[in-house]
Length: 308
Image (cartoon, rainbow, N blue to C red):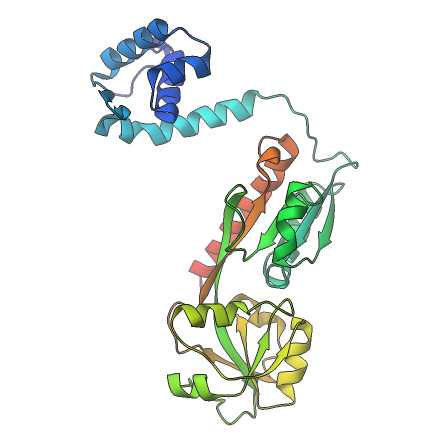
């Protein structure tokens, strides 16, 4: 039989949440503005209610029992939802004065940005989006100075002080012209490493993401030509025997009558695209709203991938 919530002092769940987060009765009491005896009394009441010790005192602090670990996720989620529901509404999506500044990679500009613009145009047509293209090495300064609200793309080496959320995963494919000598069938491992390839990398001194992944596997391909603008790659490949690696989710933008695509014959040639922001913006209502919209689109992309 479900437990009757009317018989539960919900403050006990707040106490539970604080002890789980702090791992200490004294720190949890300080966090909640309670005396340590009062918090200990609340914990004892919750132990009786749930018929479990919940936390065991150890030299390292309060260690949760298996029962506490089992219920911690749902309780923490419920606490966050209640907090969001009760906080004052300081952001109105229909307010025309709101404009978000985003730094979006070429990859995410093709895969996610059209969905984001369509979605925001439907649910909050008066909210503006200022989209920028910036190299990864500039993003920490832009985020720290609040010059951008979010950075979206593949950013594996940003400092850990930034918050992030997963958006979508993608994998590399080989792209070549239809008349390429290797077109029409999967290419072999040896063919991939020896074929003349076009490398697209964002900056003059940067190593491309492809070559970084290959280096992690102890491999090196033959790069015949390098460009810094992805926009140039299709035109170059269409008039040469060069191969270029592109993301699978970007394939629909290319003319299938002109280009042939096949898998890269090397495992783990995948990346994860994320949204990254400064911790100072985490609790801003407008920022929370924007991240929720990105979460909706991330689930949409995941569903589309599963439906293939």
